[in-house]
Amino acid sequence: MFIPLKHLLNIFNDYECVSYGKHSIRLVRAGNDNNCFKITETAVGTAVVPTKVQLEIENVELKVKRLFPNDQIKLQLLKAIKADTPILIPFRKWELHMLPSLTTGATNEIWAVKTSSFLESPRYVIVCFQTDHDLTKVNTDPTIFNHANITNITLTLNGESYPKEKMQLAFDKGAFPQAYFNYTQFGYSYKNTSLHTPLLGYPEFANKQPLFVIDCSRRDESVKSSTVDVKLEIEASQGFPANTRAYCIIVHDNIIEHLPLSEIIKKWN
Image (cartoon, rainbow, N blue to C red; front, top):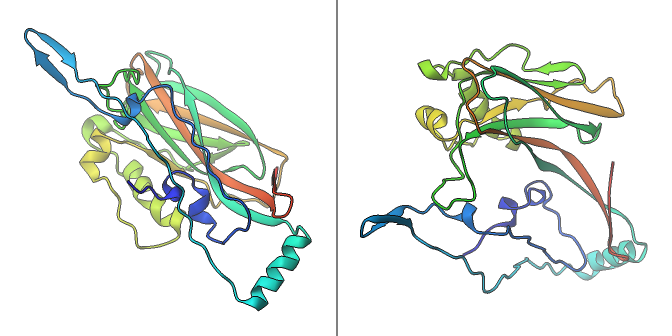
């Protein structure tokens, strides 16, 4: 099975240049493989037991294309490497935050997600919810999310709100056009291309993966501050069910500096 690195690390979506030096990758696995499977229960006699599955990885290989420059370009590269000229690698980082539980029965929740530097201020924020999802069980589908009867989600960055108007969603009546529109437009805006087809249709969006996308990539940056407070206000038409977990993915700019000779990597703040 071949998995493009851009599906695992977003740096390979944004940075496509060739880099000199030793290349290695470190993968950290979870303590169990429950998030990799959705196992149905089978009947054994009068008892119902889940099928047992174990994932074993025997070998991992990193395949990288190699380029062989001509002598003129090679000489220029060797001079830059000898001088240990820094290589700046800009990309957009995806950062996951989780709120373990919304207030049961409440219809409004204010979540202070984080305080970030100005460089790492959000470009996009994606919010989703899961109710009664015990991810330690192998018969739970980790890819299914719940709409939790959300009516509006507001992102606040240092007092500036996104979107400017309330979404006015009504999932119980099948009315959630603004949320679905934001979801479909994310691909066009993020990839800056018109060649994009959403994976979810209108019904599947509500029933399987309601992802609430907030685009703040065009915010006014004329007034800069050293830090950015990221807050979410979540509103619902009915009280939040018990055991409802909230996830927030923040997509922000990131820059790392690579020194090719000394093989030192620095992060810009």
